[in-house]
Image 1: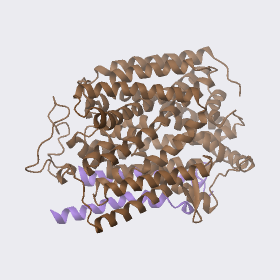
Image 2: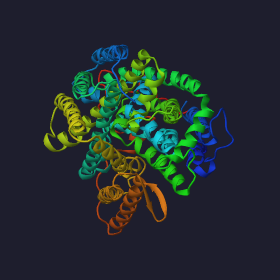
Image 3: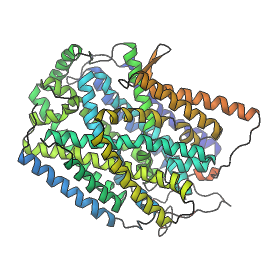
Length: 65
Length: 531
């Protein structure tokens, strides 16, 4: 039981990804490459919306269902 | 842009407004409960499932003022205003981790407000009172700003003066009084559908008229640096970038400390409902990001609004036919009603639980408690209305800005307290005071013109500087108090109160809420063994 719980906590690491991806602006404060007319700065952050939601869902399914 | 009254737009607007009013009153009968109990009136009986919670929290967190102010900021300064997107993305992983824990202990112990939790967890009346007072202080100007949101769309339809606002708020006050949290939950469904419709139409139609998103970004990129206070399409300097990241982080940490956000979350049926919502609420962030881009569309369309707050209404006036203007403006105005209702309920819960019952009538009956909360919700709204009508709008905006700084100072007690009682309540109280003082000092020093303060060569969100001061003081004083062996206060919660799997053996079962329903049935969860 203890063993299993400890291992499962690693799933929470997935939730750290949006913080790393979004809280260091030098990573994405660029104009190019553009996508559908959107500068990189904008479409990159938009892309994180579904990505963060997906990661959260994965953690939920792994730990609570 | 001149604002004239259009009969078609106004008719559509009024029709939609009247329909949600009817809905607000009908809500009292929806999933009927005994509204003379605070749990039922102020938390909807803690029975909202995943979908209703999604609508309610979406309607509650993404306020009308947000839909006006975010694009206004993007219109004014460009990329710096876009921090709203990363903010509303990273808030959900935080919520996913901490909120279910709070939901569980609140459910076990019958807590309705964050101050209830602090009172029980740390056995400290002063700290709980500080948390309640901070919540009230942060919420009041926020309600006032929802009124500003209504004012802006009414003004765009050529309706000025105070009486339409007073009528709108009187209606809101009446059905909130009667139906409690059920009213905004039901109205949120209409509000959110209207917002989604408006945004989808706008992001497809308007760019098609402006030559596509490429042309819109190009126009904004050219126009922003020419502004009186130059803006930018991409945050280029180190200062701009640290400001951007700290605003996103600080705002995200603060959001679920707001009483109205917690009210929405605690009204849900289970901890899993909260978790599922953390995964599906980002749908609204997508909408918010698109709405932020309206600021650039306004620039590209060559519109010069009288005030930045008119950026979105003027954009709609220029591109939409009158009937759809009516729909779009109704979406925003109804969008103000949902958060205003939840905020006034949250403020009423705080007043009733943590001031009235704590200090005035400790022995009051549940019926009396619910009655006081209903009356308090009226007073809160009247207060906000007077605030907006009598004082300049600027005051409400400044205070709301400070509200974000203030509310983050409750993080040690409310959020860290979910995990550990190491911090001493007395130390946290002094830390809280230090954080509040630093926040006020920085805001006044900047003359409320900005929320980013440069200290030690780093430009960062004031709220985070204040939290740093708060935590340093709280940790240092706790260490000292422990070293000298000063006694500790009592904790009424037990480890099992935080454990989803159920009440530990020997623990005393608490009164179930709602009473007519056996606990933990709907989704059967706390009793379900872990896989």
